[in-house]
Length: 63
Image (cartoon, rainbow, N blue to C red; front, side, top):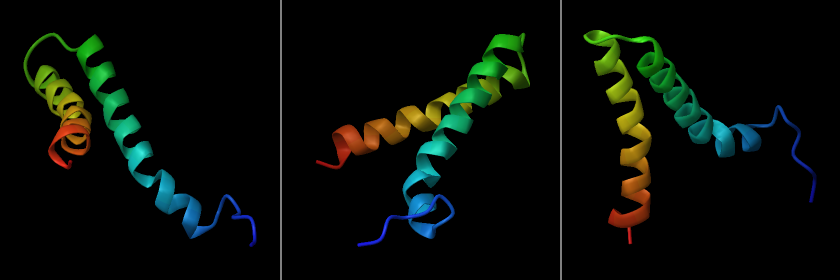
């Protein structure tokens, strides 16, 4: 068995969704920190709702 390299498709297929959720969470937290009503709050709520929804789906719904 060969060790996967960091550029291999195997590494990207494992880390693709955790990185996407981390980016969404970061955008949501920064938007919530610096926004003062309006579209910034909507952006923060939407970006932070996606990881919560994914966690709920894989934690409770898919049993």
